[in-house]
Structures are given as structure tokens and as C-alpha cells.
Image 1 (cartoon, one colour):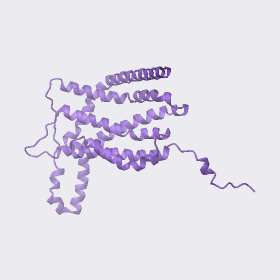
Image 2: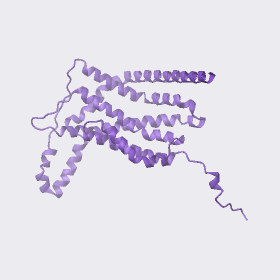
Image 3: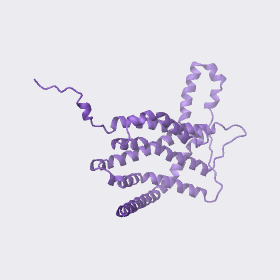
Image 4: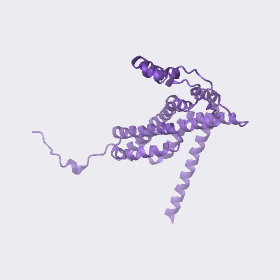
Amino acid sequence: MNREKENVASFIEHLTELRKRLIIIVFSVVIGMGIAWNFSGPVLTFVEKPLTGKTYLTEIKKKVYAKVKEQAPRLYTYYKLDQEISTPEKMRPLNYSAPLEPFFIQCKISMLLGFVFALPVVFLQLWLFIAPGLTDKERRMVVPFVTAATLTFCAGAMFFLVVIWPVIINFSLSYEVEGLQSWFNISAYINFCLRLILIFGLIFELPVLTLLLSRFGIVSYKMLAPKRKYALLASSIIAAFHADLITMFVIMIPMYLMYEISIWVALIFGKKKAADPAEMDNFPITSAA
């Protein structure tokens, strides 16, 4: 009976501690949202840039097509590549249909940006929640964990915005023909972008999580390496929730690559097992003459 009371008391303590950490996280995100409010406009402008049709892909195409023109002019003429690279920029403004739709979009952008600003506090609170179950040596990893987790999330978000987002929008705009023009709704456009920012940020957290678990001896290279095919399958399933093939591949490939990096992180930084005494007895012991 006493044991049950102790378990209930321990469970309530954990819930109280979790509530405390969540309240701190929520307050930090709200403060970050207030700071981020003034930056929501420039962020929206940056996200809209691929809508002009001019991205880093445009410059790559020009260089590739110039080589094709030089090496194979007949192919260059046959496929009318000159028309593709000479397409002028076109302004495609976002549209909204509800009275307060732009305001709510600004709130969503500010909330995500505020969450990014609050990431050090968020990861610190997560660490403090699990800290009672760690050793003194493991607790000293708090600063590397918070720093690495924050930087990798930001790296994943920026990788998506700078590299992947222009590819998705460029692919979408490639369907524009006479009689079929794009008409992007601001909510659908921004919600799609923000969702993928979060996904890529979390994908890039995988090596950090693996580093921690491998240092604590929970996972290892031998455990992760044989499960590559399952990681590829899981990446495909998660990516399959998105409608178009391009988005599926740009989610699946980085997700699997992060798993592959995690395997090598576990190999290099994982906890090394102590030598088995029974195995040590098999080695001959030579004494100095």
C-alpha cells in the first residue's frame, strides 16, 4: 500500500515538474513572439521571393544551358532552351479571401519565429526535466546539448528556406501555361511553408538526439546500422503524407541522410563498452625479463 502511495506521489511530482517546464516554455515563446512581430514582414517577403520565378536555380540553368549551347547547339535549338532562360520575372502576389486572414498569417509567422528565438530556453527546460535521472557527468553536457540542438534546428530551417523551398515553388510554377496560371492563397502558401520549416528543423535534430542516446549507452552503431532499410521505409511513409512527388522526395532524402549521419555519430561519439574480463584472460600476459 505504501509503495502504491509512493508511486502516485512520484507521478504527481513528475506532472508538477512537467507543468512548470511547459509554463516556462510557453512564456518564453510568447516573449519571443512579441520580439518576432516586427520581423514577420521581412520573413514573409523572403518566403515570397521564389514566386517571381527567379531563384538560384535560374542562375544554375543559365550556366548549364550555356554549356549545352556551346557543346550541342542542335539540342539547344531543338528543345528551345533559349526561351526557358529568357523568361522574364513575373510578379505573383499572394491573395486572401477572409477579412483578417493576413493578420492571422502574421501571427503564425511571429509564433514560429518566436519559437525559434526561444529555442535555447525550450531545450534547457527539456534538459532540466530529464536531469534528475542523469549522473553528474551527464548533467554537465547541458551547454553542448542546448547549443547543438538550437544550431541544428536553425540549420534545418535555413536549409529548407534557402535550398528546398525555391525548388518546390519553381516546380509548381513550371505548370503555368497559357490558360493555366497560378493563384496562391496566402494561408495555404504560408501554412505549407511553416509546416515544412518545422519538419526540417526536427529532422536536423536527429543527430543531436542520437549523440545523447549513444553517450548514455541507449543506442549504438551496431543497433542503428542494420536498420537502414527501416529508416528508409519510415522516411518514405512520413514523406508520403504530402501530396506531390517533389515535396515527398525533398522530405524523404534529407530525413534519411540525417539517419545516416546519426549512425556515424553513434560510431564516433558513442559510449565505448568496457572490455569483458573473460575476453582479457584470453590474451597472453608477458612479463618483463
